[in-house]
Image (cartoon, rainbow, N blue to C red; front, top):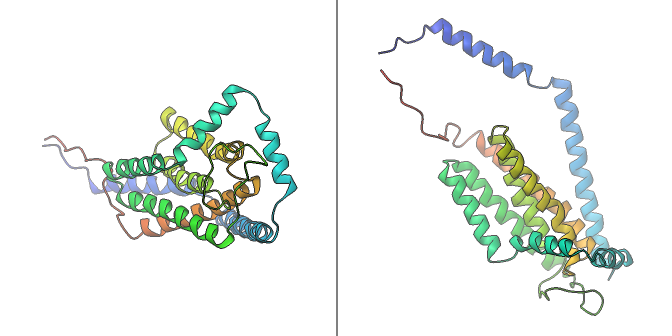
Length: 255
């Protein structure tokens, strides 16, 4: 049997760990400044979405929307069109449901139970809020006689459901990858891949003629607010539930 370490040695290790944690933590003034900037940014995003929603509700159309759509659809590179189709494809049903379930099952399979619940909350929140705002605003989608429309969809246009789903649910997965995985090539590639999809989905929805640019902008703003809410729920619950959840089976010590 291996001899247990003396208590003093364990205490020394704990003291070093606490010291390293304190060294890597920002000072109180820096934390207060970051918190202040975060809340100011959150307020600015909320105000911007409110103003945009009012304009969309009271103004039938924006000339700038048509100009942006015309400009994006004028790009004739074949690879660009294929990329736009590929970026939008995961956001359509049934593949969006399948990919969400797959991600949830992966989190559950790794023993990340609160992360699993939080991911479900993010998916439901983005979808529910999107449908609610669409029904309140009831903005028609771009007409085929004005711009090229790839798929004629029957639901309302503002805000884009694709963009909100990518920003809220996809952004929450990015958050989990960044916080839970150690720095590695795999983590970097996954973060880049998801980041590219989130950044390009708005352009792809305009390119396909299924949303106006203002639909996309509103979805990015509202999706960000839903993402912040999802992360806040996750952090609130993480300190109360499953704090000591096992991520991997601990190795048994050999005698």
